[in-house]
Length: 260
Image (cartoon, rainbow, N blue to C red):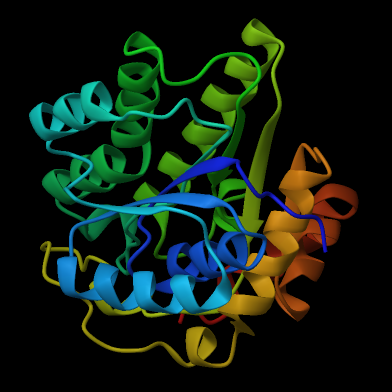
């Protein structure tokens, strides 16, 4: 296993799901961790697990990525130059496009696109990363093509792909885009319904998805190897191949696939 001893990694959305799994994987490689999320209690549990796995220093930051005043203050307070910046925090959606309130569209875009972009710029302005820093960004399989009941989510994940590919070209640095499929995480619980209420249930597809730690291992391996993209999931990833090579078949059948 490639060691990252002495390297500093910032992970957003680190209190649960893929973010917590990424924290554990980086911890097992001896990295110093800065873990940012909204839930302090969950962050404490992640820190305990990461300490047992051999992490270096661990700093917990309780903050909402859309609270830009708090994010700017955090960026200014960060002591270490970042070797890795992993932008993972996000929110999903479970509603038909025409029935979704525009406030929900805007909320998903705020969390999944504008917040990571703001954090990236705030950290750069504060001198916390440069061209030597490797950025990892969690998009989604939904960032590669449209999918039913994910209109705003797809839009945000497509947007983040475009932004960070452009950043990579402008800065001449390493950026790895992560495209997970169905991973066994609680993301569907907080996904937004058409009126903004939480979905509040674990989708069968999510529950039967790939183990989050296995997903994180493949993602971190891809980041360390400098891959531009990491696509990870189960049989649903076949849809990427179908979309690229047989678009007619994709659009004929994708709408009939269960959105949950």
